[in-house]
Length: 559
Image (cartoon, rainbow, N blue to C red; front, side, top):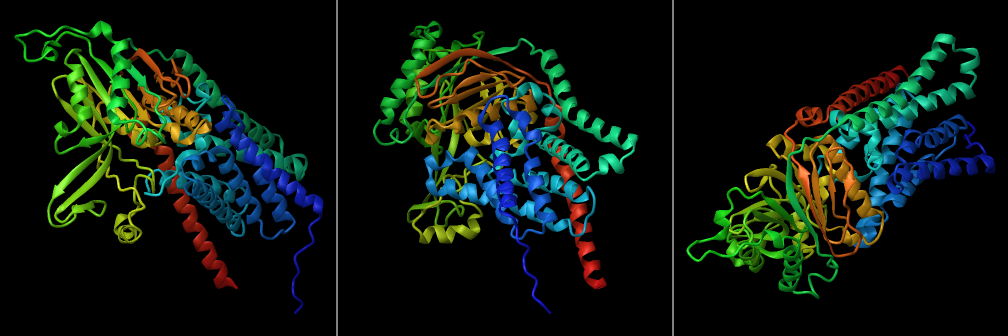
């Protein structure tokens, strides 16, 4: 037999394929880089689908080079800033995330051998969304480019996220792209003119119009009609503006604490009262005084010992300061530590201090007042490598041999609330604000408003911190909870229940916001039932994957 040779591909065709790759990367990057460009995601996948169709029709080999390159470019354009904090981590995030996207696309291309018509495209959509859902739950997780996030700065388009969450946006992206692509294919291959009757044409065009336009119309109506109930709690958001690469070395913690307390003192001077000699604590007279919550950023201090807060100079400074300010609480981030005196390690993540003494680290949020009351919450959604060692039973022995290169923070098993006076609220620490279904846990627990504390300056003046801010808007819509957001170097802001950002601070400037957020007890459909879209798509994907497997087996038997 003569050996088959690959068909010769004209240079013009190769150029066209690469142009389509570049067009895909540009269209899908715009929503994450430019405000109000979320709509481009509704047709952003069409160039990639066109590239795949042309390659299949011409029987081009090694098509994976094109679609993997497309996903690498998309990841680079939108998340290149990760390399500012860690070059190796940034490169790994881009290549690994693009590889997973490319594998999904590769499975879709493989399924076209067995599925006909629209079925492989439906398989692609539900497989992608099922992957996004899984990505929210596994240890090694980077859901930054979930398709529904593309509308984070197009808030008037996605008020219905309170029903579906972010993956509802992912489904909208796929439905729109696939319907528009189907319309294009029918026009290009002659189906529109020679195969489709009037009813088929009407159905296809109507479907495109409804799927694209209806969410915009519904959302605009919801946006205009939504009214927050006047139920305010006062907040003071303090942005101290410390260089994260210097704060742990160049500036002593005592100096940082003094700078922050000066900002607070100058902003709440009207709250100060004089001590009463025969009173144990002025804070004890706080009944009847409206509460005020002061927010300081993530990892503000690193001297918190959870076994005994009094060992912390920062804790003592804060509680001492607040004795003059009844009704005022301070929420602040801390690298905290729990010590154990026992022969064996309490967990895989514990580090040995000396024989019989171990320590576990946490990225925590604490609330304190002038009476010495303290509540603590440990961040659970941790950044892989920097904060968390994935699958510790597997990687702990390797990490010990390497001298401890992984972060070993320990999070909470479940969400808990903090309190400003007697008002329950939630605190998402940095990366946790990216996880929609996780975030709903605060509202289910009874949080009446939300806070986010973060330190985004590791990334420099790049799109990273702006993207991170915009994801808090998604969480506000999904839960209908107002958010007070405090960032070390910006952007700090107040976010209302429609996700609209107010009073945002400048980047890399010391700043203070004194404002209020409205509390809310409403439970949205997304809070109550969780990610219905993701679960449904995962179920459909499982059925189609099983069908594909059966078809493969039957095809092999028939040969």
